[in-house]
Image (cartoon, rainbow, N blue to C red; front, side, top):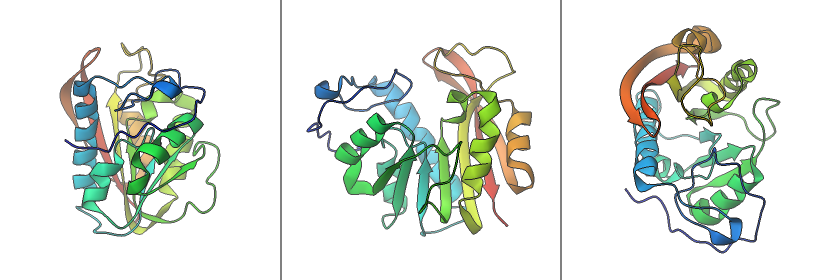
Length: 216
């Protein structure tokens, strides 16, 4: 699955601590590409999330919240070529995304758990792919609510994340894997549907959740 052009003309930056996935190696940033199998698994989650979003909206403005390195922008671009905006709190990730995937849309550095910066409103679709588990539990609800508040009436938000049982995850980069009850509580009355599937990951098998919320 093609995802970008792999450009690497970026000035040196302080790198992330390893929790973000980068599909291409960029030596000047100290960034090493993730294994191809890991990239493909994450891209497939974008494919599934986009398909869920398209059950409710066609076209319009799309936001990829916590877009990381921007690797999912090519998947979104195929479904909605007119509007893609990515936001992430990591300056390194945004710098990488602008350089490598800048042709797919626009990117902004911001922390959605704290506030909703202008001009981030409003969007017809908001994607949150593999993000919640990297936040402490006390910040997850704020992140979901702030993201939901970026939707237009009739807009859709799709969240993908591993779900846990409230215990420690085998993945060292995961702060807290929300339970299904957590997810439904965060989303509240906007929940349209939620489902899980059993998948294999780098640290063993786990349950992957897809939660769909609609702003009616």
